[in-house]
Image (cartoon, rainbow, N blue to C red; front, top):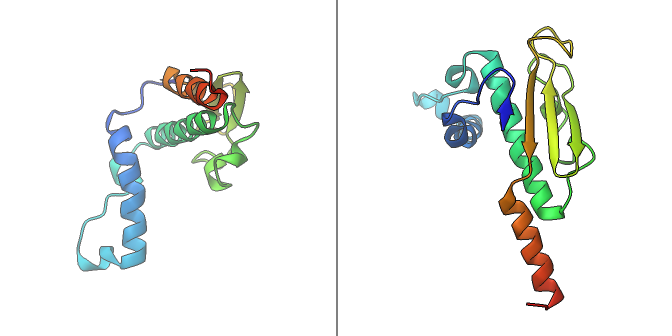
Length: 145
């Protein structure tokens, strides 16, 4: 994955899911009232651009999973993301451009205008592992192996 303004922080891959779980647990079970410190996206990534890069990374993973399960990319983000997830942190709808087995996700950035220097973009090719899994499924279902 390429992010226009740099790479997604490495801890993103390990912590992103944990942040969501911690937030849900705090809201559901009242852990925040018991004195347990709960990290939020804002405390883990104080810079909004970093937080937006994390959001793009999470959507990248969902899109790759959809490709792995269905053999094609979805035509729109509404298939893998809710209304709030289809907009960037500044309220601008994300742009999604699927092409065969690659796609581009683009955030307009803080100025809310596309095509300026503060845009964040993620261009991802569906992984070899996903393509191999699809090939193996087709082979298994055909009975040719």
